Length: 459
Ligand code: NAD
Ligand code: UDX
Image 1 (tube, rainbow, N blue to C red):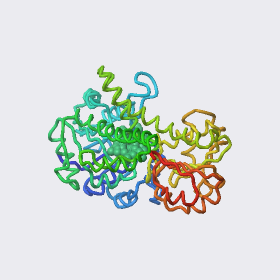
Image 2: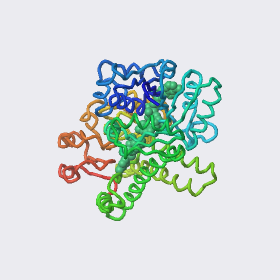
Image 3: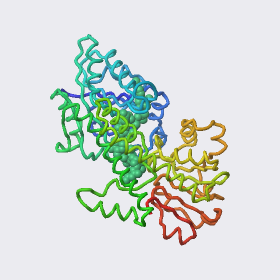
């Protein structure tokens, strides 16, 4: 099977960058990324590459090279499906907010809508690729929807989960640790292997059965998140015992069996994937009656929520148990550096906790827009939008955020925070001047030398 045309449904954080790299590396394949969201497609088509809807280092270059040559962004979903040999489904699969499985199961309505759309439109055989992260055995449901069309079209379904991390998406896509392809049809698998072979070594392309592939994606995220919760749990113990979590992480990370990555204690993991995928794993385990398995993984989320609450209450108790009317500067709103994505960012929950105590919160983030910050905080529905507007301000100058503040909280590990003029910031703050470093990125000795009261997680 030769793939000449690819369609990707969903122009989000995964669909956009993934297809841009496929188009860059496979100039002979026409790649069309479609979405129902017109604004998003318009932004992908922006003349000015700094206006792409997603900020990812290196993305503008890749899009700049391929767009208009063999990479297209469009809202004409039907046309792109119809002409494609291979259709990627890369739509969102958020946690359900209603009905059975509320707050746990993955909401598969967007995926099913895609399958129905493909079934309706297709007149030629197609390979349908699950790129979205899905519960194990979803391919069966997609197969049922597609095979009931009765229009004689032959569909092959593959699972090809995406492992990119935001902030490093382009590097991850160009040099993946592995590409995972699960499927039944050898021809279909080979067709997708041939696409990736254009730039990925064969020994990194792994093929499995569909169910292993679907489940591996959930398990990879669960293991990664578990490491963060594990080190975060130890950070609290370090604070009580005089041990230093960075020293502990370094010591255990040098054991090659443990490894050194993903051991940075923090204010808690965020992002659109970890929590959603673990909740989904917990839900699947529960539906099979595997309660011990479910409880084991649920603890990763419980620990993460505890870490966010603990950070907020440490600010409160250090500031003499009241932050009411006090200005607190929050540096960072994105869930990690080098992205404008704020989904499930710890910053949202910390801000909400401080607003509950009636603090005046000033947020600065180098890449997140003001409207996004208000959308995030309003979405929690803890208080009215007017009240959020009164208590929370978003500023574009970090020095203004810190001026006259009682405390600074670092929520995202943006590199620029390290090179600020901390003398200048200190001079303009109220004293004692507190810093709560939720990412452990600032230099304790330097800051204490200036006069700051510096608090770091796990020290
Ligand atoms: P996203 O919300 O950024 O993008 C999804 C897009 O799909 C949206 O633009 C939406 O408008 C569009 N869409 C939804 N239904 C549609 C339909 N019927 N037709 C056309 N367009 C439709 O989501 P994302 O972050 O790109 O994640 C997509 C999937 O990839 C999820 O399953 C997620 O778990 C998985 N994933 C995400 C990441 C990540 O880092 N964000 C990494 C690996 C896997
Ligand atoms: C994750 C997975 O890494 C990726 O493979 C998958 O495809 C999508 O989900 P992402 O959420 O984009 O990627 O970022 P990641 O680097 O995993 O960070 C997730 C969260 O954990 C961030 O809030 C990050 O700050 C936090 N984290 C990570 C820590 O607190 N400590 C660490 O040591 C590592």
